[in-house]
Amino acid sequence: MTSSATTAPAAPGFTDARATWDARFSRPGLLFGAEPNAFLVREAARLPRASRVLSVADGEGRNSLWLAEQGHAVTAFDLSPIAVDKARRWAAERGVSVAFHVAGVDDWDWAPDRFDAVVAIFVQFADPALRQRLFDGMWRTLQPGGLLLVQGYTPKQLDYRTGGPGRLDHLYTPELLRALLPEAEWLVLREHEATLQEGAGHAGRSALIDAVARKPR
Image (cartoon, rainbow, N blue to C red; front, side, top):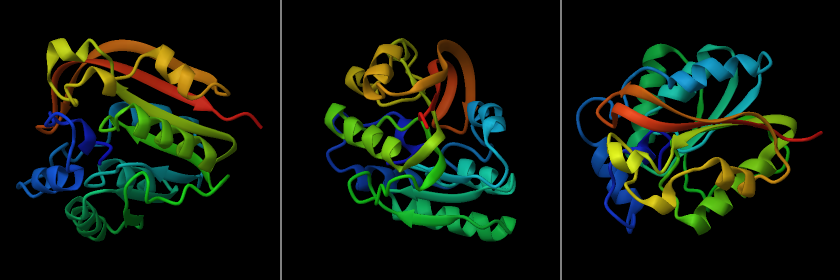
């Protein structure tokens, strides 16, 4: 599982997700590049200074490290210990502090009202049942008034195949996100297309959905 890591072309079924992502992160270099996700950079301007932020399925740390460098108190987890080890070494090189953990969706402690923001960038490894547990957990751990920032692929991405799980039931639509988060106040919810250059994992014309949801106070 990885935020950036969860969207590279994947074997159907994700029958051994940890082994799959460990193998991908074992390759030289950074699977999803060194730069933070552009949607995250844009929408993170909504976060108050020194926010407590959780980065879900964080991969090699490109997003969590950037958030920490903006002054936020960042916690991050990923299923792959190889990815987390890379992220820790990269954080040490950059002199950045992030609380990294090895965990999956069902291992993580989704303690209520713990974070000011939760970030989930291309977390599309999840089948419908796991996705429901993921979104329930992310919503629960947000404090009232907190923000959930999500970017993912839409079903049209199956035409492009420039990243993503390659499975229709893992992709997002506005209707799906509204159903997953019925209490949300939607600050952003839009489908669009763009050319991504995020390492080898996300490269080329892509069908995307951007979402920013606020938890009611």
